[in-house]
Length: 78
Image (cartoon, rainbow, N blue to C red; front, side, top):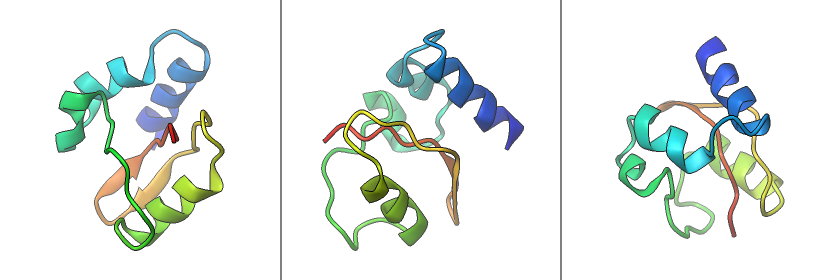
Protein backbone atom coordinates (compact mmCIF):
# COMPACT_ATOMS: atom_id res chain seq x y z
CA UNK A 1 0.00 0.00 0.00
CA UNK A 2 2.87 2.39 0.74
CA UNK A 3 4.18 1.96 -2.79
CA UNK A 4 0.78 2.90 -4.25
CA UNK A 5 0.53 5.90 -1.93
CA UNK A 6 3.97 6.96 -3.12
CA UNK A 7 2.87 6.66 -6.74
CA UNK A 8 -0.17 8.80 -6.00
CA UNK A 9 1.96 11.42 -4.27
CA UNK A 10 4.27 11.62 -7.29
CA UNK A 11 1.27 12.16 -9.59
CA UNK A 12 -0.37 14.78 -7.36
CA UNK A 13 2.91 16.68 -6.92
CA UNK A 14 3.40 16.81 -10.68
CA UNK A 15 6.63 14.81 -10.62
CA UNK A 16 5.14 12.28 -13.03
CA UNK A 17 2.07 12.05 -15.23
CA UNK A 18 -0.51 9.35 -14.50
CA UNK A 19 -0.15 7.81 -17.98
CA UNK A 20 3.64 7.70 -17.79
CA UNK A 21 3.61 6.00 -14.39
CA UNK A 22 0.88 3.55 -15.39
CA UNK A 23 2.83 2.61 -18.51
CA UNK A 24 5.78 1.35 -16.46
CA UNK A 25 4.28 0.34 -13.11
CA UNK A 26 0.86 -1.16 -13.89
CA UNK A 27 0.54 -4.91 -14.34
CA UNK A 28 -2.85 -4.42 -16.04
CA UNK A 29 -3.20 -4.80 -19.79
CA UNK A 30 -4.18 -1.11 -19.83
CA UNK A 31 -0.53 -0.20 -19.14
CA UNK A 32 0.13 -0.11 -22.86
CA UNK A 33 -2.50 2.67 -23.06
CA UNK A 34 -1.13 4.67 -20.15
CA UNK A 35 -3.61 3.05 -17.78
CA UNK A 36 -6.64 4.06 -19.87
CA UNK A 37 -9.37 1.42 -19.58
CA UNK A 38 -11.63 3.18 -22.06
CA UNK A 39 -15.29 3.86 -21.38
CA UNK A 40 -17.29 1.45 -19.25
CA UNK A 41 -20.69 1.50 -17.63
CA UNK A 42 -21.97 0.39 -14.28
CA UNK A 43 -21.80 -3.33 -13.64
CA UNK A 44 -18.70 -3.82 -15.80
CA UNK A 45 -15.98 -3.51 -13.14
CA UNK A 46 -15.47 -4.87 -9.64
CA UNK A 47 -17.73 -3.01 -7.22
CA UNK A 48 -15.06 -1.13 -5.22
CA UNK A 49 -13.42 0.05 -8.45
CA UNK A 50 -16.73 1.06 -9.99
CA UNK A 51 -17.89 2.89 -6.86
CA UNK A 52 -14.62 4.80 -6.60
CA UNK A 53 -14.72 5.72 -10.28
CA UNK A 54 -18.27 7.08 -10.16
CA UNK A 55 -17.54 8.98 -6.93
CA UNK A 56 -14.84 10.98 -8.76
CA UNK A 57 -15.39 14.08 -10.85
CA UNK A 58 -13.73 14.22 -14.25
CA UNK A 59 -10.05 15.03 -13.73
CA UNK A 60 -9.95 13.78 -10.12
CA UNK A 61 -7.50 11.17 -8.86
CA UNK A 62 -8.69 8.53 -6.39
CA UNK A 63 -7.12 7.43 -3.17
CA UNK A 64 -5.87 3.82 -3.38
CA UNK A 65 -8.73 1.42 -4.15
CA UNK A 66 -8.49 -2.25 -3.13
CA UNK A 67 -10.20 -4.92 -5.24
CA UNK A 68 -9.75 -8.65 -5.74
CA UNK A 69 -7.41 -7.74 -8.62
CA UNK A 70 -5.10 -5.58 -6.53
CA UNK A 71 -4.66 -1.98 -5.50
CA UNK A 72 -5.47 0.80 -7.94
CA UNK A 73 -5.23 4.55 -8.42
CA UNK A 74 -7.98 5.84 -10.68
CA UNK A 75 -7.89 8.99 -12.77
CA UNK A 76 -11.36 9.76 -14.08
CA UNK A 77 -11.13 11.15 -17.58
CA UNK A 78 -14.76 11.11 -18.73
